[in-house]
Image 1: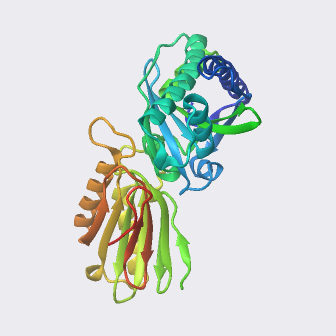
Image 2: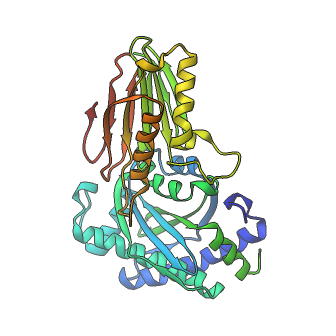
Image 3: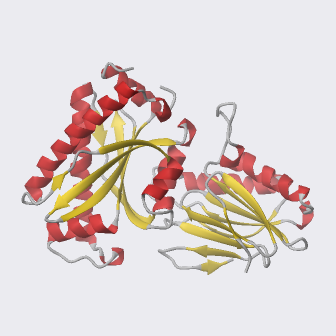
Length: 204
Length: 157
């Protein structure tokens, strides 16, 4: 594996399947804390150019919440969630019963709620990956930045700048009542870890 | 009003009176703004990483501080700019997530300053560091650099 560009169809299918299992885990876990108010659609998996991600997410200056989780042990790399204001509004209203005005109005409790959701989502995906590959993957506590999406994406771009300009993006719809909001997650194991994962899955 | 010329990541552009160079949403990236106040020519390089050493053979020279700035200076000289008149303003190099050890942003700032010294370009202003993103607008008429930020508001250097 030289870069994320070089996935073949079989490898994409396997990764998509891990995504499906992860989303199933996540929906179950979220149903627990949100009193069954949220469902999650089948995730869309894309291998996408760093520059393109910015336009998918609404342009470089769009203000978003970025939640960063590092992976260590058998797999090194990071997960980055990009959550927009609609997502934050849904989570804070469902989880805390508080209305959401804008990012400035998010307090410590709101930030904790977002971190907790990110913990649940990343745990769900990584457990799926971990059990299918039999690899130990430890996740760090989430860190949050609220700023321009382009600036937040500098972080993974700089860390992974040497392995080509493609990243793995998982997009999901969270549905609650009549509303549907999107979350975006970038999964970035380093290339050595990616090769190890694909080996373990038998799709090298 | 001049045209707005967009400079992407790992990219660089040159503008002359009355155009404006714009680079969006720099986090740990650094924007190097070079100006010749006689020619009224402005150049902006937007680098992602400090150092091109130990990279593969066919690197993107615009991505690294140690290769991009010299390239920009040479392009500006070809347009009639004179080295001793050139001045630099730099911005960006933030640390968006707290990191262990020296952040990419800090390394970028250091590498840019070192390279400016090596190329004998005077740095006359900087707005760097912090934990917030910045959009740059570099005016070729005045050499003024507008730094916009959601968190901190706007400053002109």
